[in-house]
Amino acid sequence: MTNSAVVNGKPVDDELFAQLDPPALAGSGCADCDVVVFPATARCPGCAGENVALQALPTRGTVWTWTTQSFAPKPPYEKPASGFEPFVVGYIDLGSVLVESRIVGAVAIGDQVELRLIPVNDTEFTFAFERVAP
Image 1 (cartoon, rainbow, N blue to C red):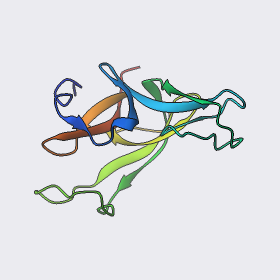
Image 2 (image 1 turned 120 degrees about the horizontal axis):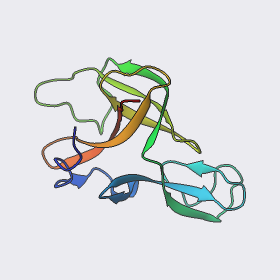
Image 3 (image 1 turned 30 degrees about the vertical axis):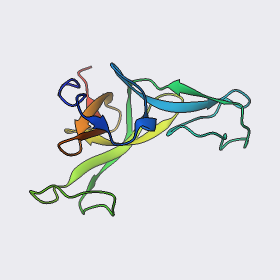
């Protein structure tokens, strides 16, 4: 799966990304207590401080856990015209933060994965992680 095929659309939410070429998620890091979160926030959930800064998160991580989403999520999820198909979701350990994400393809706990851009519909894209060869 290549990222360039979907970059021509627009992100479902601009605030999810620090950059698009190459893609990187936007987190925030607290200078007072070192807590990193995704998505980015204006206040630190660890110490409630405001000394936070946006930061690009690592694009590679490790599958911490995963499951199959077997039923259609609540709105704003839009079912494709072809109908709902189950998909894999999980937590990706990026070192300083766990990110909940869709996962493309088969994975096992501990697998190395890399950030990808995937289409949501004909005009928008979002992020997912995909297994990379060791």
